[in-house]
Amino acid sequence: MSGLDIQNISLDLDGNKILENVSVSVREGEVVGLIGPNGAGKSCLLKSILGLLDIKSGKISIDDQNIDDLDLKERAMKMAYAAQGAPVYWPLTAETIVGLGRVPHLNPWQKLTKNDKIAIDYAMERTDCADLSDRLVTTLSGGERARVLLARVLATGAKYILADEPVAALDPSHQLQVMNILSSLSKSGHGVLVVLHDLGHALRYCDRLILLNDAKVIGQDVPEKILSDQNLKNIFGISASRWAENGHSLLSPLNVLDET
Image 1 (spheres, rainbow, N blue to C red):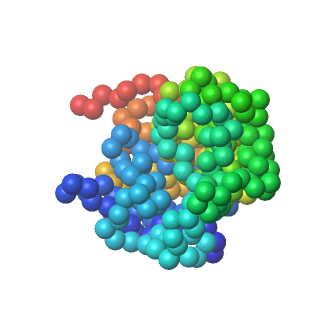
Image 2 (image 1 turned 90 degrees about the horizontal axis):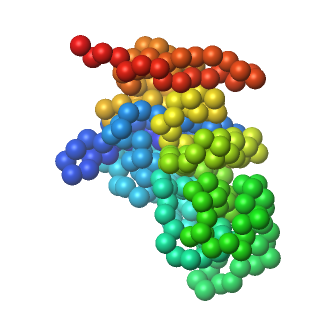
């Protein structure tokens, strides 16, 4: 079956066990949320999938191809990565930043083609940042920069999008905007794997959730089952308020539970 499949991978860093026999999958057309407390291994899992960290054991495949059989260029055309924070220091235009997403499709020193420019324009339209095209990215707000970086990811044409806390440090309106974009991308056929700390967003926007704790997968299922009161208590040490509005199931952390 086509998809992004991670089978029983383990990862050690500096003698510490970071991931232990972790198996997850992402299919086209779904948003899969990766949740868990700090230090659970979420970001390291993304980096392991991308080949940025060398796994100790296990197998990673993309559309039935072993990732080890793909060179870096092929991987970059199949998976796109939105890194946590992703600061931009150079005063480049937003369009230039988005254009970097086309690098995997180019030979060294090759100029952008007509098809590349079409892909860039499409990506900026889809992420609602076409009006920022000529702005220096260093002058953009956090929300504007987040949309531009998502456009760069989309411009690669990659089927699978891996995003590490894409709404961190954004104000509420921009958080919703970014999550709406990711949801829209999944509906157009992309598979999205996203690290989230906001459990409300995880419940509302994800088709499935993967719960990590102490380097292991505790569970993976639909959000309503993973975000059970028992899991919130045992893994996060909290209780939550729940309600529904406009067809959405919503959740907000309510209290820190006494550990004694």
